[in-house]
Amino acid sequence: MASITQLGYLGLSVSDTAQWEQFAATVLGLQPNGREPDGSLFLRMDEYHHRFILHPTGKNDLAYIGWEVATEGAMNEVADQIRQAGFAVTPGTSEEADARRVAGLVKFADPSGIQSEVFYGPLVMYDQPFQSPRRISGFKTGPLGLGHFVAWMDDFERTLHFYRDVLGMRVSDFVRFSPAPGIKMNVAFLHCNPRHHTMAFAAMPRAPKRLHHFMLQLESLDDVGATYDLCQAHEVPIVMKLGKHTNDHMLSFYLRTPSGFNVEYGWGAREVDDSTWQVQVHTAGSIWGHQGNL
Ligand code: FE2
Image 1 (cartoon, rainbow, N blue to C red):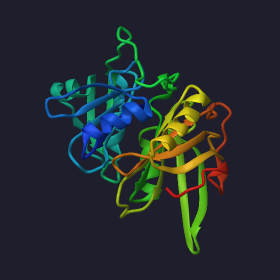
Image 2 (cartoon, helix red, strand yellow):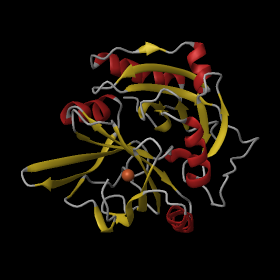
Image 3 (tube, protein in one colour):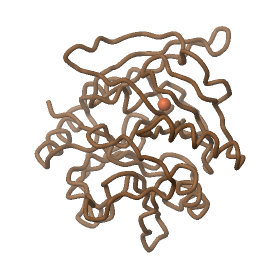
Image 4 (spheres, helix red, strand yellow):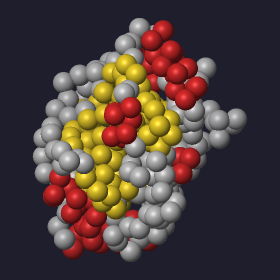
């Protein structure tokens, strides 16, 4: 079966793209890379033309997920797998592919109705190297993809089946805990390349936002520390302090974006080797730290 290879890009629906542009450049260190006539803003973090598209459509949530595959053939195979699982798949038009700066794409909605795209052939710009507006060493992406995101989904088993058995992701582990007496939470972490998880989810059908956070992984611990200082100096809300996660061993903190969902800013995660990895279960999210409320 064909599998997705990485999280290529995320589309976000935001209220204020000017505020976001300032936040992304001066806090996160992402590079603004132009706008579309409708005001949509591209953000770069590596050689890709963009890894985020921010649309001024005001929902302050995830707009769509862009899953990358290696070739047109793999895209068509994944599209067939999605159709065989009972979901509608629409071929992207050449105008839609141009808007995403990719060679081709297909569109579908996941079991929770999240707009999703499988694409191949992203525009890469080695001729105009990524340059962070901040003095940071940069982001760990390449074959690991953009980073990861965590979303609230409608149904746990249907979501697991779709991403694992239809899109070809693999389970890394589960974090199972009780946030309040009598309430059980099960978070599934899935990978599609050596990044420990590219997506994670739990079931919460009526969550106010789909998107809980997305994660940017930095090349250097100092990038995380310097940004932690910057957030405190400029009163950017830190929603969870520095800490280290149990499952991916990421050292990170979480800050609030202008849209209300969060960014995990991290360094040093361990990677998954599919030839030796065994699924694990954790009952805590962090080894130490991460105090706060998400
Ligand atoms: Fe995370």
